[in-house]
Amino acid sequence: MSGIRNIVILTGAGISAESGILTFRSKGQVTYWDYTDSDGARQSHRVEDVCTPEAFARDPGLVQAFYDARRAALSGVAPNAAHDALARLDAEWRGDLLIVTQNVDDLHERAGARRLLHMHGELKSAWCRACDRRMPWAADLGDGPVCPECRRAGGLRPDIVWFGEMPYGMDVIDRAVSRADLFVSIGTSGAVYPAAGFVQTAKYHGAATLELNLEPSAGSWLFEETRLGAASALVPAWVNEVLGG
Image 1 (tube, rainbow, N blue to C red):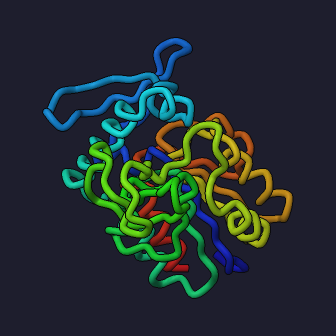
Image 2: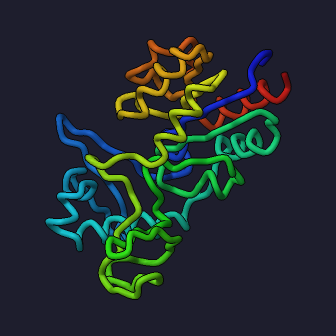
């Protein structure tokens, strides 16, 4: 790792899937979210019905129930070896490091990562549309709880970046990627922008690029190196290389 000081890591659904976090399922041209509701029944909804501002305006009860179920499911999963390895890198790497995750779960934090940015929001956060405050949240939102800040009821929504909304922290991400000596993508599809374009920005500014994925992503051809396999195996091995070197 000679000459590498600043590292930016992008993580996607593939790193959390090994912990049991359910992900998108595509059938033809339609994409679904599969999940288990509060009664233990398996549900399936089109992304357009639960992951857009229009869906929330049309049927807020359905959207809240969907995210309440996803939030509750976090108690049944745990960080895997890939999360643990990145937390170790965060703790031991003496240069600059930013882990940018597309995931809304809290597995990176629970593993111990601190230099972390959730570009698509967090399940354990709520956003009050009345006072525009964001706050930690672990309970359900579907019953219209009172905002702890402004004391208004019914104004809280999941603090999630839905399709059609601007991801969080793009200015911070752009600066970090532009300064990176190494950009690493882990468990991503390479098809969702703006995250899919980070590798091009990194390359433009001279960074080395590495992809760790279960299978080649849509953007694999952009990376200097691609390693294929389970994140729980690839990421610890790569972290050992970095810290050992």
